[in-house]
Amino acid sequence: MSQHDRLPVRRGHIGDARPQGRRFRFSDDIDDTDDRAVTRRRRTRPATPPATPDDTPVTGGRWSTWDVAQRGPAPYPTWLVTDLAAVDTELGIIKTGKEADVHLVQRAVPGTSRSCLLAAKRYRSTEHRLFHRDAAYLEGRRVRRSRETRAMARRTAFGRDLLAGQWAVAEFTALGRLWRLGAPVPYPVQLHGAELLLEYLDEADGQAAPRLAQLRPRPARLRELWDQLIDALLILIDEGLAHGDLSPFNLLVHRGRLVLIDLPQVVDLVANPQGQAFLARDIQIVTGWFADRGLPAQIVDAGLSRLRITRNWRPAP
Image (cartoon, rainbow, N blue to C red; front, side, top):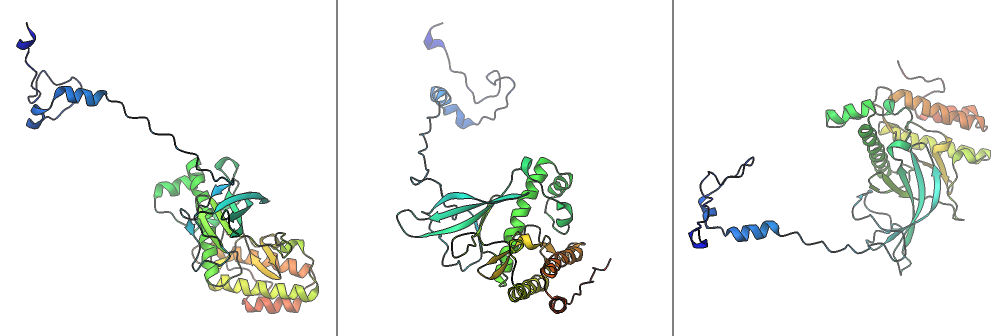
């Protein structure tokens, strides 16, 4: 048979031309398709994408994540660098903890004098994280999907990752909420993944603000700090919250001002069945520290009366 006697197979009819094991839908429009063009299109390999250039800043570090992060309350503080051309540079580690590590980061715009220092709190990966007593803290917190709730309850790898996200979001949300109320907390700059950037609280000499536990205040100074603590607790209680892990180690003294830190486990006094118990423990721990440092009992009682609480107070069963 010569080449002129060969007829093209019409693909507009479903018959012997249909490939085995596959389903096709043909229409009359396909009869006019050039088979050779189809073959050429099928054999064409996609072009190799061009290499992505290295986007690392020339000065080192990383580009600011301000444009992709969840931002803190507006208006933004004047000291905060919000330029998208800024670079974040690691300066060292401030603190290591069970749940997270805190690093010192400088955010600066290259070629200018614009810069600020930030505390980068990074929650640890699943295999290195150890959240203590997290089940009690999470009572009253819910996620929308029952699958996620079950995963967190069973502490699967997926569930632990969800918990880490909840801790970061809970702290960022609580800090923003308290900041707007005027509570003494660091300004929450941004939240990006499991990293929380906070205002870095330093002294005039550049050193990090000390924890209350590190200090031995004189009597007059001790009373000032006690009054500041009662003021801060009043804000939390009026907002229906308890710190949940309050101690002299979670209180900074920044240039004479008492500041609450470490609030991922903040507790809702109404939604959490153990909320009152957490509040009672918070008050007992800090009251004991001030009493041990020589704060007179009558001053302690006066402060607790402002909270409508006595030293013998216990939450109702």
